[in-house]
Image 1 (cartoon, rainbow, N blue to C red):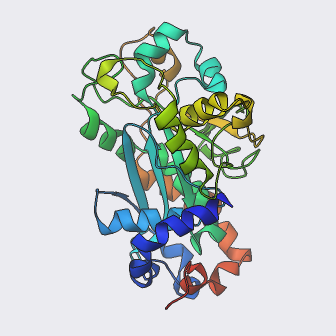
Image 2 (tube, rainbow, N blue to C red):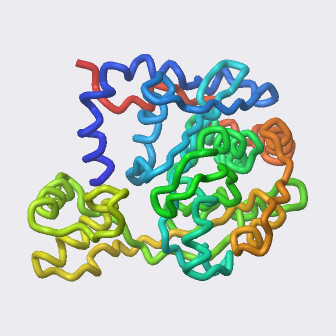
Length: 333
């Protein structure tokens, strides 16, 4: 229901572009798996790539958030045909995430100081027909690439944190993400050479706001803005609500309903992706320099092709029958 509501909201802005965006997807019969050549593309605001990112995200099985605070988004494109393989987006992480915090081993004060070195993958995956060839694993591997770390540094080095009010150095030490439903077949046992890229760190409690759908969240938001007080933190952060979850909890409490209703019960597995050998020590304040893993997107891609792509394409031919028209969201007028 939440996905359908998001489709209805997105139709006015994307319907007129749908034919063109479907042209950015590959026809399965025209793909040569041996010639797949992944390339990372940084998504620029108000670009054609941004439209494609938004359009592709609408096909996820759960509604994709827009991310919070800092945000950097990427497409993974196949150079053999310039078609979309998949996408991922990173945004500011939530402050409290028990599994992540336990994995790092930091206290509240160190977390407040070091959280800007962490980002969360709020959307990540491959699109058809590449998804049939296990390219969800490829997209996940790209998150850990040198290019992502360097793009993050270029964008955020020298920016100022609203929380600490300090100039940031743009060093990305850790990426977190969660599975869509329960355990993940993409992230589990995902290795590069002899090293586990995505490490398991427990499960979420299953909270959020997408179950307040079909226009209900909009009504709750208007009610909260009119009758509820945002949780005050710092003047520099603005005077509004911190996020959608705060709006839901404030509204539920105000009308006499349990704030436990924010828990939808869909637990997601938490994964952490350390980008350096000493990520944990750095985030705990025990080291001042990061010992980076050197893993370019091209090196990761070649490993993926040999380990997963070529073997899968030799016995699973389902990708050959897929056509972009199968992804059309709205009927032509």
